[in-house]
Length: 296
DNA sequence: TACGGTCACGTGGATCATCG
DNA sequence: CGATGATCCACGTGACCGTA
Image (cartoon, rainbow, N blue to C red):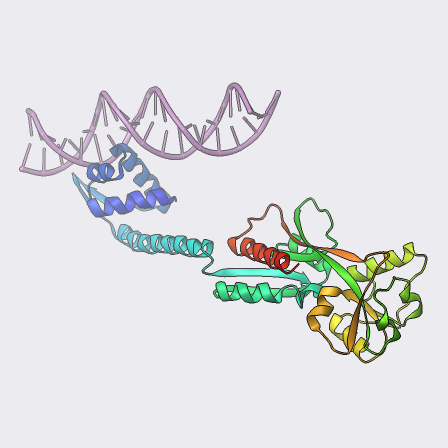
């Protein structure tokens, strides 16, 4: 059964005359007869009584007509809903972002986006890099925000920020007098770091290895918030994104730049190549990138 | 990407049935 | 019996699909 046949059927119901209905539809009369016959064949019962030259609707025809009104109404509703979606009036947007960027990189963009498009349902999930890639590939996320993006055939990557890492030490620590530190500092100072399943920690490990040592933190914790709490309490120092440290502005913590080597991570938006990038995803991505660029 | 086969659909003419 | 309208049938056209 095709929509075209239902359209022909509805016109014939209005006219109850094959020739006039065909003229109204802009087709030849035999075509109309043929399509109505196909429809009747598919349904398995006559929709019209042909009594001589008179055409009248059967009970089955009346029932189908009633349903046709619903079908075409639903269709017009669907068209309206889709056009609203394209106009960002409704819909949903699911973003998976690294825990290390959720707290300080996204809030401004999220707030601004929500104010502009309050009817878009926004989900921001703090996830680890591997989970972000996995969920993107399973179509569970619209956008992913990752550090140190990897190449993947099915994923598009848009780098938008080079994030500098810095040492965070308790305010009364002797190191805070120095204008900068080198990574060797991790050899002497007790440190609190993310576990080595985290991209940020892997980066620190790699850089330390090039300097000929392995970092030995006194404590490992999975959230940046808990790590900075420990630093503020004087347990040790840590290495975290400078942007995050500036953002929390904890008075009991001093941020010291790291030099030789510079420690940076590339932050990127990632999305599926073959998936239609909806208007909400596109707008969010553009706003995030422009907000980060205006701050740097 | 070009080509050929298949299929669905529309058209026009012929035919049939019915009405006045 | 002529006018009108529905159906049948052959044919043309375009879309789609598989293949080289």
